Length: 170
Image (cartoon, rainbow, N blue to C red; front, side, top):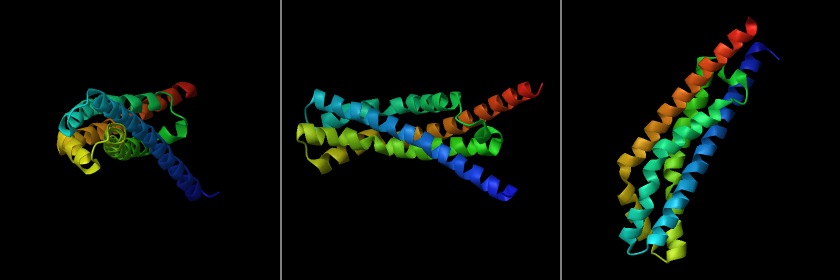
């Protein structure tokens, strides 16, 4: 294997690692959306009331997604992914950016569908009410915080791995 082919293989693995971390964020967003949807169904009332209750846990993702990123990078799966800052930022950027976007939007699936299925509410009205309650600004906040947390987690993991490798060389 030539050095170029080896670097391409490592790059593919780094991108895969980023998408694996992103998938964990998506699962976190969907679970939180399920909690919001059940909360809305339990509270009951009109579609607007259910949407207001279902949207309440949304901003918890501002804490949940960065916490998941820190936990995922606490013990990195392969040190090679974090040997260079560029690789570490790639993993963190993919995880935080793509995972944050899909998690932020994935929240809506169970948060809107559980009241539709369990509460017998009109689907289009429920989706419109929930989107109105959450709003674009909250989605943007979750995505930006997730991206910044992903980049920070990647960079911090890189510096931790570099310090560990320096200790091993002594």
